[in-house]
Length: 506
Image (cartoon, rainbow, N blue to C red; front, side):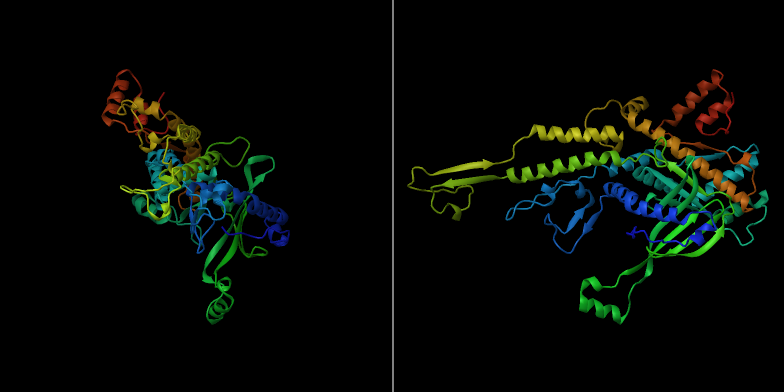
């Protein structure tokens, strides 16, 4: 997202927004506040996760043509190097955030989950499951859920906006069970699940309930497939005025306002937005599902996994850079010669000899790497603090530093990964509820557009999550047989194995 003006000039025509019941001054204020305050904070979260490397044609302050994003958290004494005439300080960046985020995503959506319909009619339930499954598959399948978890972990929340490419008449007709498979493949592709990352989303919350939306605004800068200047004029300006006059790729600000009644789209510049399209919202509600990464009381946004790690990451990078500079200074031996003629003309090396008549002559040796236990201990304590804060330990990523017991035992794995498993269960609660709401929204839209008529009592779904730990299938089946022998209802046992219905027997 590029920058935008944040002045007080009116960007929207009040008459255009008044027709959909949204105050133009409020939309202007929310966009300016979002761009000036919220987006920089969100960009910082992304920078610390991604740690992008930016390149420059000139040499920067640390003597390099590239700078990593996490360098912004280093102290000035490292960023601006040494004094005049002294070598620049070495910068060491070790991204200890990204692999923790990826591990959390792997545990949450490392395996496909199963969406089961709770419709009473088994045939209808089967058709609904195929339809929802096909919609998810056409929108990325497992990768779609992994993207949700990744963006949610970084920003603290993620939104999914449902768009339906309905026919002009809004209906494909009621389908019979005979060719249900072909019909599902034909209609499911009309359902687009658009993941909305936090920097583009501006919720207009209900004053009486922070969980409700009066409107939902998408605002972003779109890069176009054209340049601002082209042809001979552009080349002449570039040669005469220099690099600053080079042609640039054209961009356009886009703003879309969703309400229960209308979908309104504006295009233009940062100072003026022009209405280009307005259509009725046939669903009668904003087709949005909001998922908090981890719930945060009395807040629309959730808790980010990156934010609490930033200060620790800064401290880790600072200490690693200090250690690199210390090692650079001390890893080789240096010599101070006094009273020896032409000492600097002969390199210090094996078999070298100096002779002098000066009785006060001497050679002083200093340097050489030496142990620094406090430094190593401090770095290890920082890493342990990051482990506790994120609940992701190196063991979860496959790094075994020592003997951790019999890892073939499920109990040993659970004890070793207790914090990570507990964190994943919390995230399953929030993401699972979001996926259930999304499934209900898909069915509601299918009913409104006449694609798959269904009632509210048929829209309930249940999620069957896979085990987070490797399991012995034979052992699970033996345990199921023992439960049946002691009288546990068959339906409940099948449900635990992942084959049961939505309602367990009691």
